Image 1: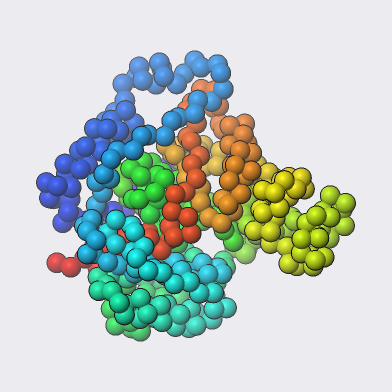
Image 2 (image 1 turned 120 degrees about the vertical axis):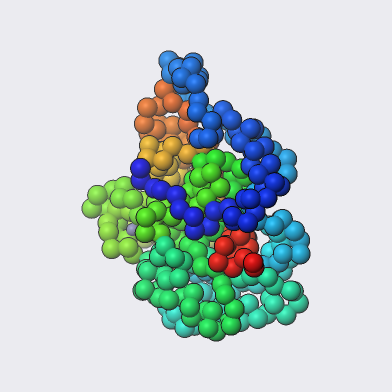
Length: 397
Ligand SMILES: [Zn+2]
C-alpha cells in the first residue's frame, strides 16, 4: 500500500474511551456501513452494483449530511485555539472555536525568504490574537514537508526552510507548546471535520494555490506515510521532461494544474502577441508581468474566450492528475479547494470530463465525486487550530 496510517493526529485516546465518542463513531459506522472498511461488503455488492455496467463510469453520490458530526475532540465554543496557515505568499491566522467558527482573523504577506522573519510574524500574530481571547492551544499549518514527529520542516519548495526546527524555535519564542503540521494536511482535516468532506471514510483533498497541496484522511486519521511526507501529489511527474519544478524535478503536476501554471501560460500567450490575447493584455495595460491567475479567472468569468481556454487547459490537467490519484488511492470523494477554485465550473467541468476520460477501469468501477471545498481560504487556519486541539501532545491531562 502506498500510504499507511499512524497515530500522529488521529482520535485522542482519552476521548476514544468515553461512551460519547464511541457512540458517535458507532453511529457514523452504521450510517456508512455500505462502504466502511470496518464492515466488509458482501461479494454481491461488488458484482451487482459495480460490474457489468455499460453506460460509462458511475458517479458515486456524495453521502448525505449526517446531522451533527460526531468527531474526536472537545466540541465546545470555550475551547479556543489559534490556527496559523503559512503559505508561499500569505500568512493567515485566526481564533477558532471547537465548531470550526473563526472568531477573529488576521492576514499578512509571507515575509520573503528569511525563516527568522516568518517566525517573528507568527509570534506577532499569536500575541495580537491572544490579547482578547483565552487561548487553549496554537496550531501551525506550514507549506513544507514535516518530519514524522511534526517538529522539523524538512524542505519547502516555496519557502526557505531546510531542516528547520520550526516547532522548537516557535515554542522558545512563544513560551508555550505548539502543534506543527503541513498546510495541506491542516486544510484537509478542516474539510473532513467541518467542510465538504465531512465524515467521509476515505477523503482526498487537493488545494490549488501557488502549487498543489494534497492530503488524505482515512477513517478519521491523516495519512502521513512512513516518514511524514505523504500526500505530495503535486509532485507526481505527469509530463516527463516537462516544466521545471521548485522540487528539483521536471514535469510535476503542479506545474500544469495550479495558479502558477495558469499565470505562466497566460503570460506566454500574451508575450506571443496573439490576437486572441488582446483583451487580456488590455486588462493589464499591456504589462505582461501584471497578468496573474485572478486576472485570468475574472476575464474567463466575464466570457473572454482565450482566458476560458486557459482555465479549461488547467482543468484538464487537474482531472488527469485526479484520475491518477483514484487509480492509486481509490478515495470516496475528492475535495478541491484553493484560490484557483474561484473559477468554479469553468475549471471543474473540464476537470470532471478529463477525470472520467482517464479513470482506470472506467465503466466498471464507481467514480469518486469531485466537490468544491466549503471552507475557502480559511481551511488551513481552521484545520491547524483544530489539530492543535486534538493533538495528544498538547492535550491537557
Ligand atoms: Zn515538483
